[in-house]
Structures are given as structure tokens and as C-alpha cells.
View 1: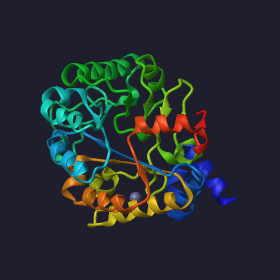
View 2: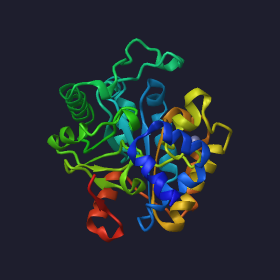
View 3: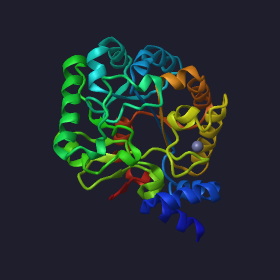
View 4: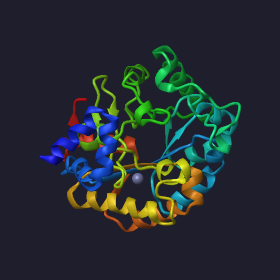
Length: 307
Ligand SMILES: [Zn+2]
């Protein structure tokens, strides 16, 4: 009964109630979300958002580490950085990694509280407040840049800062560009607790996993390591939560979909710890495109449709 209620709190989008549930019943809220994923997969996708130049500079090292562990991964890249740092992005394409369109300028990149986020060239607009035509231009320009600079035509997208800045307005834009998927929604606010689903526009959405300790928020390195010195920044703490998420999914089925900032994940050592754990786990790790193919080929593995 309480779990049904908690699931409803997540999907209804009431921020105050979500905060209250996170403080009062973090374990029950996490269980409520993950229980809804039972029977799916288990699958895991790893992605990196290459938001700042310091992240882009870390890409060759991140790619090398992933290659060492033979771990597939996806990179959400920004058109203006692809243009400015073509070699760092080419190394991803040459490494066989999947690239996602993360818009041309990544609106809302500027942040006065962080030295690396104060650059004059960083956008101060908010993606969710752009009119649909401007959203379309951001996505189309990035697509053209990927093709021109890298010879790579993405079919997947991530909304800048995703989560609460994500809006369903992107799906018809992506459909018109012949995209196939997005990974921009949060599991706790999604149908079925966060397993992939098809939107009305036909685009598939791969929601991001919840933090086991803050289940209505996203489990990522920005939350764990970056934002206000990180909610889980002690060495190994983020990986311990990742293990908890993975164990839940390996036990009953489900989907692990986490996002990392290349620079923080690398410098903190958490990326290496996460890859060490994954190497010994039974989780199937793959990129979004191949996962979608697999799900479509075998819908009995718990593929849901509808918004
Ligand atoms: Zn947390």
C-alpha cells in the first residue's frame, strides 16, 4: 500500500512530496521504484555527459580505461565542443563508442558557483524555456556538426541537464530527425519505475536510475561528486551505492542506467571502481542502440509501451 503510494508520488511530479518521501522513507521509496522493474533484463547502460571543456579533455583517458575493461559506453556530446575539440571526440568514434546528441550549446551550462562553469562562452539560457523552434535548432545544429566534423550521425539524444529540464517537446523534434531514442527522463517519475518505454512520438525513452539514498533524484556523478561538493563524495561511497543498485537489479531484474561526468568520474577513482565491479557482475552492459534492438527482438523480456 505504502509502495503504491510512493510510486504515485514519483509519477505525479510533486517536488515537495518527493523531498519528504526521500527524507522519511528513502529505502521504501527506492524499493517501490525498483520493484516496478521486476522481470526486466537485467541490463546496464553507462553514459558520460561531456558538458565542459575539462570533461572533453578527459575523454582520451576515459576511452582508454573503458577499452581496458572492454566496457561499452555512450557519450552525450555538445556540438560547439565537437567543433573546438575534434580530436578528443574522434577518439570516441574510433574507439567504437556510441555518441548522443546533447544539443549545440547545451543551454544552462553557465553556473556562477563553479570556477569551470563561469566561462563567457557558456550558455545562460534554459533548455526547457526555449520555444520549440529554438529547441529544434539546438538539436539540428548539433546533428549537422556531428556529421560534418566526425562523420557520425547520432540516433540518440539527451536533454541538457535532463531530469526536470527535460520536456516531452523534444520527442516530435527527434522523430522528424529520424532519431530512435532519448535518455533524459528520471526513473522515479517514469512509468514502470524506469524501464525503457516508447513515447507517443514513437521515440524510445531510457530513464536514468534513481540514487538508492535519494530515490526521486538521479544517480549520477553530479549528484554524488560534483554538486556542492557531492552528496556521496567519500572515496568508494558512490561505487557502494552503484553496487546496491546493481544488486537489486541482478536479484529481481531491472535496468541500471547511470550517467557520469568524465572529469569527476576519472579523478575521483569511482569510474575505475565501477568498472572493476561491473567486470565481475552478471549484468549485461551494452549501448542504448544495441539494447533497443535486443528489446525489440524479444519483447517478452519486459518491454513496455506507452508514455
Ligand atoms: Zn544520493
